[in-house]
Image 1 (spheres, rainbow, N blue to C red):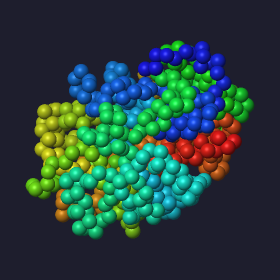
Image 2 (cartoon, helix red, strand yellow):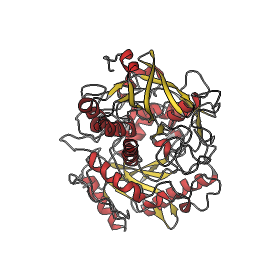
Image 3 (cartoon, rainbow, N blue to C red):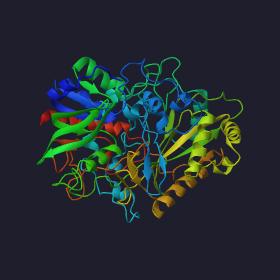
Length: 541
């Protein structure tokens, strides 16, 4: 926690930009503005975690719990120190969970596996990719093109020091990266197998320095100053080199508007109330919290919430449908490490339809943590691939996991979710919860999930990977997006093409809320590139 915060001094400044959230988008934009000499204030709900000595690093937060358990508010301190979200969200069925997303310096990028991939050009004209999805709200096109974002993709890859190979499936190649170390033996073995059945694997682009002993660190804070997340690359330099300021443990609860202008940010900083003022207000709190804040800021003139004349704030919630596949190794190949190294996009756009990517997953938490999560999900009425074993108890689940995953390499399928008006974020239904979601799969989406699974299992039938199905679990919200989409018309979008709210001339939203479609791969690079684009717009204005 930043213990040197002088709230009166913060209130006495008129900031060039107040940025709510210090994750991938917020930190990247703030860094660019601070480099231009602007006075930048970051407001971060989690801990700033500005040094490599701060926080719980090197393992999942659950490994530090006093006893194996699913995350709950009683673990708040440990979750905060591990850079994790700490609040329950609930759904329309009365179920609740703490989503596995980041909160703190770097946001979810502090937890990511550092895979930074571009969307495909076809993602920028999404409606044509799904002609049979009759009730989706997919737009014909984004308000910007791939070519408009391309120079910012290149800047982001340079800024985050992306290492990796080029994808021959991607129309633009993505080959200008820093070379990665050679693949581990297990992934080299699987790369040869994929190529032998006519696929096109490549080294996954990663924002990672691959220092000696690198663990990949997917799902937890890096202990070796090796992972190039937005805390290390942008937030820390903005503060140490360009006089930006961060107030952590800060809960922003209301934006006050005066006409078409946000003139005050009302928050509690380390429990103390504060009222802050700035020329530009930027929301980068994530696709769950940004719409909640806008709705919570309703007033007589805007009873539906700020920036909500379209009625779309919170609607069109998307995530990604993620399943895991455990590929067995032959007896001669050494057991794998836990680095993410390999990916392929042969399933991204096919004759059967548009699906997504397949990439190395990295290491799972230990079996005790997974077993506890499975039992918690069962108590909440959520079912998964190990549900049949749940009645036999935690020891049996741990044994099953150990045997099933021994000498296997994990890959994740990441499939595009489509936007629907009925999938949305709103205010919580319980006073102890932070946000509420309403989410249900349409028949079209259920069919797409099954089709992608069948496509993967049939293509890899000779290797017989173990499928761990979790795509249907709507509490898997690591890539939540779409809840404040950008577009050309104020009637069909919340933001304009520069990510400024149609209704308010100094309010911007730059987190994953802005995405009008989810694409079929990790959104982090797109968020960083777009933040660089919006920073240029704010500087020019």
